[in-house]
Amino acid sequence: MSTAPPPERSDEPDEPVAISDEQWDAFLRDTVEGGGPPGPKEPSARARMVARRLREEGEREAAAAAGRRFGRRGKAAQAPVEPPGWRTGPTRQEKRRGPLWAVLGVVLAVAVCLIALRPSLLLDHLPGGRAGAGATSSPLPSAAPGDTDEGATLAHPFRGSPAESWDEGADAIELPEAKAVKGFSEADVALALRLTKEYLVGTNLDPEVLRGGRPDKALALLDPKQPGAVQQILRSLRDPDAKNDPAMYVSRFDYARVRPAGDVVKVRGHMSFAAGRPGEVKVHADYTFVYPLVRRGSGDGRVARTIVRRDVTTTLLDPAKWVSTKGKLVVGSVSVYSYNNECDVFDGYLHPVFPGDAPTGAPSTGDPHDPYDWSGTVPRDDCGRITRS
Image 1: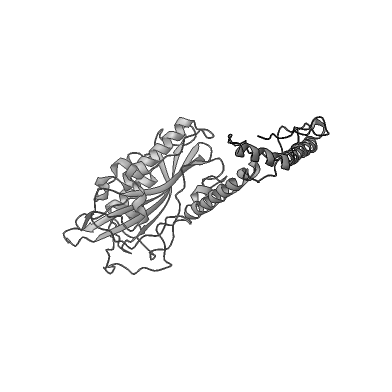
Image 2 (image 1 turned 45 degrees about the horizontal axis):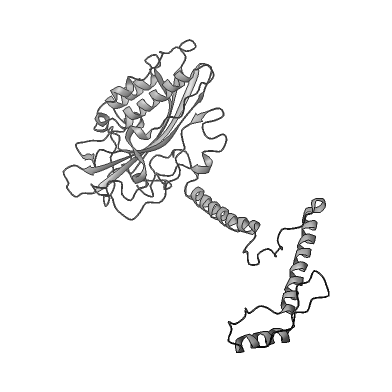
């Protein structure tokens, strides 16, 4: 068996032992022909030398790059530096920037859509507002979306109306947080807000009043030393006409002709308060009430919705500065508009117009109004048309 010659050493003392390709081939050939186990297949000496030179060059370049990156604190890198994005994917900055901008874009798009659908999300947080400087208010209602093509039924009396998603009854009248104003404590303001809510409930939601009764609970809240509103309401109930119309103050229906379609009244609105003249705290309430009704005895299942918007300002007076009764309310300005109601009928009741029926009162005049649009004030014309109910 022939043996391979001793390996040649490199001229450089630190180089590994160099074996020529011819010597390595001879070693393998002799080993296999001699029946022994095949030798390990290793790279050639030239390949190992090239690999080492490349590795050293990479380390030198890494050290130089580290010196440029850290300036005076330059240090040799522990591992060769690879270009950003090569094998390792996006760099940390790229990973952070891409998804972040995508998420911000989605959030911005959603915010724009929400504000477009519900402007109150933005307007409620703007300084100022309709309550005036220094006033505090409950959330403003937003403009309602359009109604659907589905008609109302006895089982679903609000279907097809924006009011279907509203809160119902007295719980829908939410009071703003009471705060002290000039001349009045927080407790005084809370009393003014509570009395105003009770007045709205007593004139628009009391079942006895809705079926034609007198609003005695609401009248009991009013100041007898400021008798103007009390006398006006009683006079209109006693002898209603165009000049003294109880519908200005009270929502009532003739239950001999109609009955409620269920026991739910939908409500949405806004309340605020502010200091008035010395010794006054004023409460402003602007609420819309939606009443579903059916014709009594008809059995046809048709549902009519009468919509009443009331804009009322009440005042709580300081007895030390005004002739007034402590803990009693004064009704100031009142603006009312009823929708889907017969025109020029002044018998003390609201008369809904049912789907498919022609109005029996005077014809509607003026520009059409959307009863679910709060972007403006209560309309002032006598009997306008409506775009939906």
